[in-house]
Image (cartoon, rainbow, N blue to C red; front, side, top):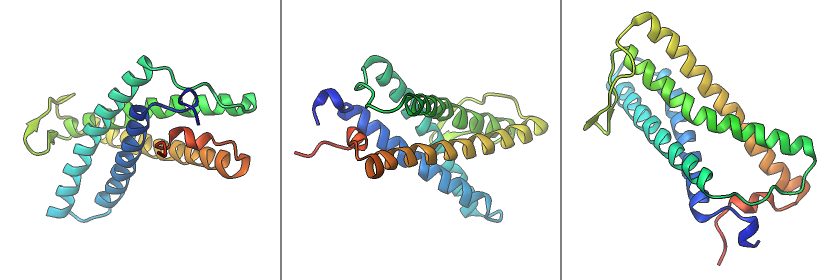
Length: 178
């Protein structure tokens, strides 16, 4: 594939790093909520918060990169697929920010500050408020499920293009072979 039809190495790296971070945060989130109160559960909550902050920072870097670097032209596909792909990408970007911000706000409202890597205390978004914390907990959970759902659709679309359409679309986001 030519450079004009591929994403930049930076865009590719941000894509896959963010994908791994999101999958890891989802896995840790599902695991930690199923555990009884314990040191392990508390450790996983901290890891989950740290992952959320990293996802937020990576998302900002990815959005900034995307706004300053033109992506390759859309691959040939029916108009409805192009619209669906653009809608899914828009939802992904929205959720990249909404999920960690809702989690951070929930943590603040619950009275549990975010201390990045155990050394850098981050400001609270809101004052502690039990009722608000319960609302934000649910919001964070459902936004995360929404993100997981859009990720599944995104992966399904990429695999469809790779194995059904055989149009090479997936290769645009894979590291170049030398």
